[in-house]
Image (cartoon, rainbow, N blue to C red; front, side, top):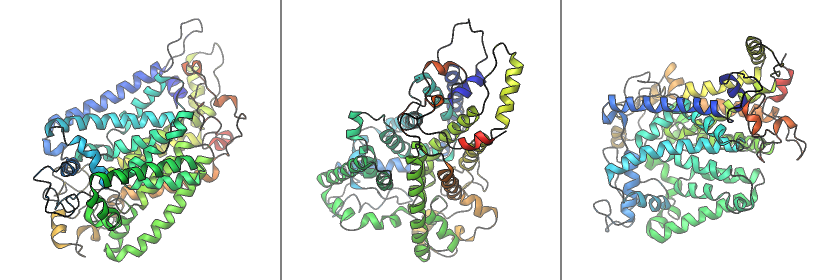
Length: 530
């Protein structure tokens, strides 16, 4: 997406004028966009009450898990057979530790930090993980020749996605979603070197040791014939299990041998609650029962998993590394029994990838400006070329659709939920169940989610419906995407040097091993456009 953005924000200069360093304009635009997003968030924090902008209940649970591992009272009770999983729960919501034992080992390090300091460090870390995930995403897209270009694209996209609901909600509750996402993207998008080949896949295994859902990347790696990476991921995951047994033997036995890892979904709370934006939550809400919808969900999840993983593998094997990786992540969000709203942070790299293909498709059909042409003529030609780039506008519409669907709309549409202090950002917060009430009475046919109607059904299920729509689009793209070209047969236009970033017709650094020989999605359509 680099060259087109640079051409938009960089005026043409005489050939004799000294060239600006590659990516300077993009870096300036990105810095302004990201600074604006941070400033608006700071204003939001200082103009609202603390409870309106932060309720780090999940961070509390992580810390408690670490304290139990360290045998710290009052959370640790030596009279419990399995102190970690027998802990009755934190706060009025009775939030239990619902992660593998290795997660408590990781969180034990954070439990040494004083609580007030931990809160501030966590907020800063969330912003860092957001930037890191995008930096690794653009690396996976091939932006490696110019650090300025890559940093500019990272900052510009971070400014655009900062106010999405999953990002804001992750910060609000103190979740680890951004960290795990950054770890997985870094792991699977490393440059192909002798050193990286030895360890690629370990990040997936470690992430799965903290939350199980990243395990879906292992069959994805097998389908893409990356057998070594899949083996490394499995080995790293087994290592996390061993670490859990070393530090928490009784809890590990209960989790893995007592079946808790399979039956743990019920311990997370009400699966039909509005915040569970997975197929499990959608089907439970539509059928009016959690237990009564098991068979339908299992069938739907199995079908979605097959379609999603095959689609991801096809995209990867055609040379679209990031598109395949994100399709796998999307499949995991849909088929997992629990995908809370903040789990959908994968929309962040999704917007970046859609924007990348949009600009790439537009640049593919753009005509080079003639020498000595007046500025207005160059702009008229450029705009005319863009207007006919149907694939380009399609990808921009996809990026805009993701932002609209997952945006942290202020105040929601339905007022403030009673059980989320003052948090009501985003479209999904239709009338919903008070979790304290659910913990007392269980699944009942009169719960609010079972009686949505009209617009509530669309917006209340907005994230999962948006995800299903994205999966359909990705399946279509996997079918029509150009086949990967043989090694060494890539068109010259797809190998962009550092110098070409300075001006037209640069598109981006497409020299990365996984992207250099694959035409952009929609290229065939771009060629046919008038």
